[in-house]
Image (cartoon, rainbow, N blue to C red; front, side):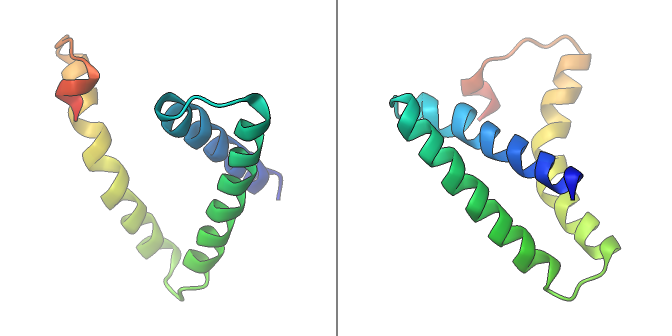
Length: 90
């Protein structure tokens, strides 16, 4: 349970600070509300995904299909010392 709690907290913080806050500047109170809503939404999506009836291997494969294409290219570019910016990443 502690690990799941940590993952939810980390994910909601990343969504709030790295995705929403740069797009829409807001007060700390609103940031906290957004983080709580993000935690709730991510938790509900996680529960629905776990109840989908798929096995652990299929869920790992599904997560890899979303994660790997986004990470492999910038990681390889970094190893090859190709400096880039956010515009070229997108």
